[in-house]
Amino acid sequence: MEALITAAARALAAGDPVGALKRISLRDDPPALALRGIAMAQLGELPRARELLRRAARGFGAHEELARARCVVAEAEVALAMRDLGGSPRSLAAASATLEARADHANALQARLIAARRLLLLGRLDQAAAALACLDASGLSPSLAAVAELIAAELALRSLRTGPARAALARAQAAADRARVPALLAEVAEARAALDRPAARRLFAGGEQALRLDEVEALFTSGALVVDACRRGLRAGTVWLPLARRPVLFALARALAEAWPGDVDRQALIASAFRTRRPDESHRARLRVEMGRLRALVAGLARVEATERGFVLKPRRARDVVVLAPPIDGDQASLVALLSDGAAWSTSALALALGDSQRTVQRALAELEAAEKVRSIGRARARRWLAPPLTGFTTILLLPAALPLE
Image (cartoon, rainbow, N blue to C red; front, side, top):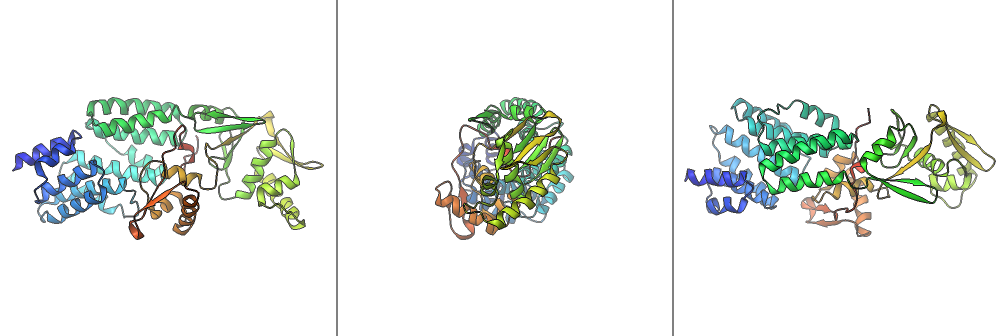
């Protein structure tokens, strides 16, 4: 019987869940339940996989602490794939400590990589980078090495360091080739393809230009004054002014940048910032107040001067002014970017990743569903949200909590 367990485990390690199930599908002892759960996870049957792994963990006795810890790690990986991010990470940390104490270094590293990927999905990039830096990469199996390099590559991409990202992806490709796991090879190929897809649009009078991530990086280091509509802020060299929580000021800055070197009349600015077609004196007074705030905020980068018909933006140090727009527009662009990874997200997980309330996310999803941009599956607490993959461009710049450039 133990020979069947060993053979099933080897089949799973090689990415052959069907071969594993042929050996243990009729067994209900805890080791077989655990392997069946992992096999179902590899086949995409995530709720069933989670149920089997929980049954396996309950079935192991008090003296089988190591086996229970392995089940906890496997269930955490399934929860990650299900985008169930609301649970406490303490159980995973405790399982990792148990595995390390019992000299199961491979599964302990797996637990830490799962924790790092969870932080990455939640947009806590500084914590994910710290978790990855603490890993001892020596002696990693090819599959774990590929996962670690994928995390490093995404961290680099999210902070627009395309050189380190390409190097990490090359290492991930080499490790995935050694592992020979089809799902891992596909994930690496998708990550590498993101580097060659358009990531943003540079707007100019009369048209636009699609930019790849390396071209966006070059634009940010060129010294131009960039009004970044992907991350909602202004950048000039190493100076970054976030305006994500000040939408009126950002709308005014974008309108001025799109008209540069010309000016913008007051009525157009009111329409852009306040979304009204019938401005009155109160809107004009508010425009003067908001322009004063914008002028004070960008004083080190540019001047905002009044003209006969409106206002004009004049950058300091003879800089060019560039408007960088996302590949998709709309207030829910970051939400669509998260959903476009092909996984089914819960509203609670989306709220955690975006830093918004769950009710705000629910309203946004209702609007997107009415526009037929997303769809839901399941009901009540089991309800999950999906969106079709966005082909032709990458959404890296739309993901929340991007790292500032150094």
